[in-house]
Length: 267
Image (spheres, rainbow, N blue to C red):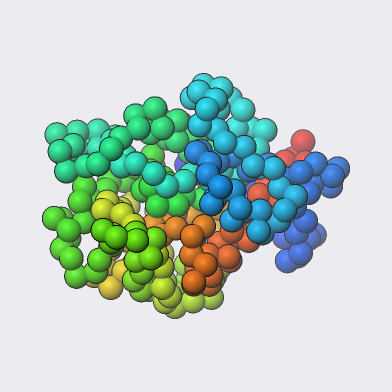
């Protein structure tokens, strides 16, 4: 996706005008609106902890065409966790036996929403499955099953208490994720058997586990492109290690606020 020159100029102007303090309302008092591909109380509450005034809409019940057409009314897109991505989207349709459950409607909905969001230069955040389908939507691939394809040096899914399973990740230097969190490494929760294999064109890896498995992705040129981040863990459930949770939500809402201001300036 080519970055629009107007977007870059606008983003620089906004940064100069508003500095580091961003309100989660537009200059006219309009609320910041976040589109969530498939919402649940955990995601909803996690976002509201960053700013209780934002408006959050679940796109899943709308139908693909309606959701995509309405996306322009929002300021950011969150793609959430859930079922496996159907492997036909990345050329592995023959290997469905190693997958879990699918939601083919959700696959289509989220891929179309991601592509539309990129057309709109809209901030996009992907969590777990959302991180994986973000990579797929941009032309990347996935490992079908981590234990079979990579091994079990690091346990990525616990049979019991799946959201009480943790491992360490290393954050890549000079990445957006490092900029957001200030961390070189940290602890994350883990509950997945699939993962990013080949990153999509233009995408770089910004965090890895100790066996080298991708744990976060972002634009290679993140400083000149709209906000895009995918994380394999569940920050909305990461109360024990908020350093890789709260800063991500705060930055995502801040970027949504920037998006709103950019829209008003360019109109």
